[in-house]
Image 1: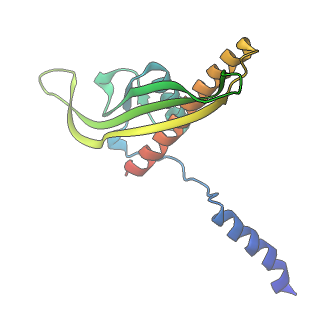
Image 2: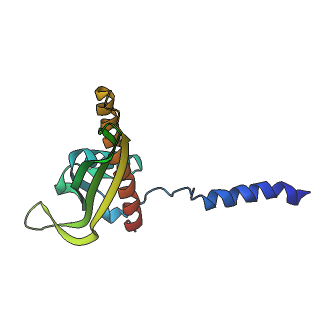
Image 3: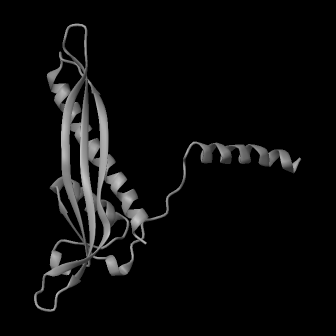
Length: 171
C-alpha cells in the first residue's frame, strides 16, 4: 500500500524534471570579484545592478572602488515587419535586442587611484532576445503602449540571460 502512495509523487517529479523546471541556486560571486562596477547602456546597467543587489552581490557606483567591471554594449536594437495583412498593412512586427557583455577583473595601480584591468573573467559575449508584436493599425495609442512594454520585456529577457551567463562564470 505504501508503494502506491509514492507513485504519483515520483511521476510528478519526473514530469517536473522532464519539462525543464528546476530551482536555481542563488548567485554566488567570489569576494575577490566584488564590488562590481557596471557600465554601458544606462537602462540595462540599472536593471542588472538591481538584480545583482537583490541577490546580495556588492555593486559599486565608482570605478575606483571596484574589483571587477562588467560592460554592457547594445549591438542592435531593431524592429522590422514580419507579415502584411490582406489590406497591405503591417500584421506582425519583430523587435530584437542584441547586447554584448564583457567582465574584467581589476587591480589597483600603485601610481594612480584608477584600477587597471588584469584578466578577462568573461570575454565579450553576445546575448540576443526577440519578441513579436501583433499590429492593430486602427489603434495607434495601443500600438505605442504595446511597443514600450515589449521593449521593457526585451530588456528583462536580456538581463535574465546575462545573469545566467554570470552564474556560469562566477566561480
